[in-house]
Length: 386
Image (tube, rainbow, N blue to C red):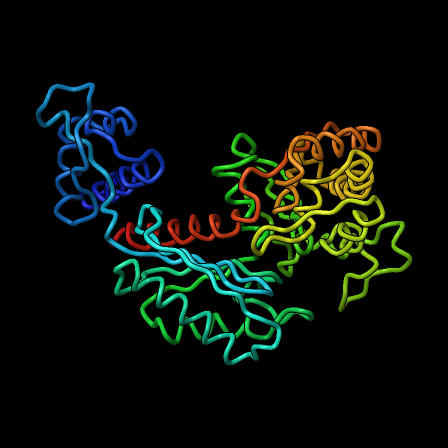
């Protein structure tokens, strides 16, 4: 049965909006080419979307003569405003943007271990409100949060995790209470970093890869055939708990001491650097391990690559991703040199061909991934058929 005229119009409008999301501003002629629709149909849908305040004329094409065919249409950037948060054990970073993801304001605040749950939550919420105000934004449509820990795949909520500050879980509820009109979403920080590296970073040409997060702690995100895999309990990628040789013990259900974290966490890397006489000063809130890796000697980097290869080869043996990205501040600091060392060792340990790359976005990948998620969620909501 053919679609009714109203259904066909909704489908065409949705298709055009998706293209504008993906490609950016387009002329009517280019929309016609990409959609395969007739010129009159494209003209009608452009008129409808302008009348609905969903798109607007944002310029003219230099390849066209001046006139209707030269007009370039884009999504209305101020249709909604977004906030992205990266919450760590030591503080919070916030970005406020328009619907296209263009940053309007950003800020961060440290939160000490002695702050207490209530004051810590208030500091974080106040930071979001202040950053939005500085951006001239009265109402946030969508807030996306990147947090350490497990996200329940059924409820989408941050699960209670041993070792994480209590204010992390309280913050989500507090934001929803103080911003009742906003849609608040929380996602594991490493998963968001993988999204950013896939869209804009080291894995932009891959639809299957694993991101190995190397920051204050360790983690992994698994992307297979373009889809992020979370697992039955939301715990896919908890590589810090992976039992490995050379740690003198085994991890437990409540702590990853004795697991891969004991080889590759920031404290473990700092200890290894000390054994090799390497020193370095961290910049800002980055892990001290990142500064040490940047200043690292060949001997230190070789020893670190030996450790990282243990975790990477385990991932490769189970998933065969073809590509592993060394992410986070430490992965970015290691650059091509550390990535090449790890790849050489994995090649000796596994028959499965695997390329090892370093992060392009580093620790900023979490905040960027949160912003991309907020943009996607808001556009999906605003552009859904009514």
